[in-house]
Length: 382
Image 1 (cartoon, rainbow, N blue to C red):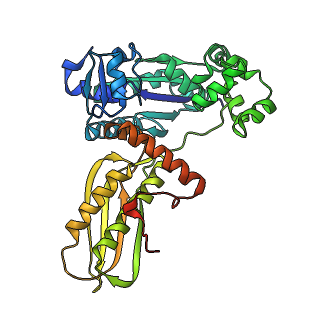
Image 2: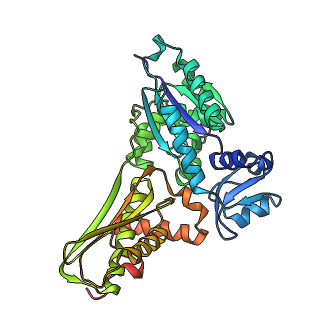
Image 3: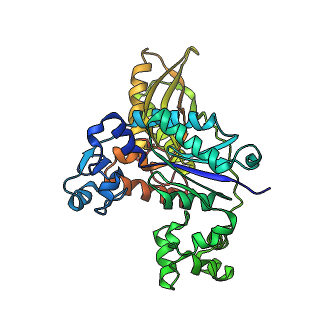
């Protein structure tokens, strides 16, 4: 049975959400991001014509497009609309994977005998726009890689089908940067030896690519040749991640307790970023020496930033710890998780914070999660 894999992507999702709320923003250069020292989370096609791109410093973006309107962004609006889009799609397809807040894969394999897969996909896309007011693009092909590249090529509001015999002619003339796993460093490495198109890459010996890039060389070659066996993974939200500490001796040492909570928040936030999750609810749990247990929680905008989560956790602790009594346990949980990445934190992060997170995570990846952290989370007495 031939596979039928669809990639759906909301068009400039954050921008579209803002325009849904305010029609005066239609047709103007629009930048979503945080403050003068922040970075671009998203931008409209009108701004992109001037060279504005995601993750670019706001100051640079405004030099390129001085007339752009900058909006800080509304996490709650975006997450609510993302949930609505997810519900619309999930009701209509047998297997759906939510790849990010605004990106979906659908497996329609075998459905041609009931409907035409392309016709059905168009109906799903139309239903999303009708029920949410948001534009969406899609591409249908035989695997995830080709359909994702196809969506990128079809935007905005694109509708594209790439049949099996059309895959190579479609991919060949495109830049290798169109392959999802090719970042700037890999592109520069390939460019230095004259590999700039997918066609050239597809003809490279696999062993040469493995020598250049490592284990990913074979996977890159397969993608360049339109081969991708990765399945569509049925969507389910991970419920939570948590950690807790039971003390050997009950304590009411506030400095130690707050240090511990701050350290917990940082370690859980690092885990979120590693697994590409964002949390929207923080829960603090305490157990007094008499075994009374209390919890308190608060909704937050989707994030994986430990400076945000640590602050919220400490604020919750101050609210839940109301008795002058020793504690025997403290716990922290992040729940209501969704798949996503750090782009949503671009609304609140400065360029310096983004660079700091990247550097700290690289150190943790190499030397372990406890290799580096914020001073507030370390116990210097041990």
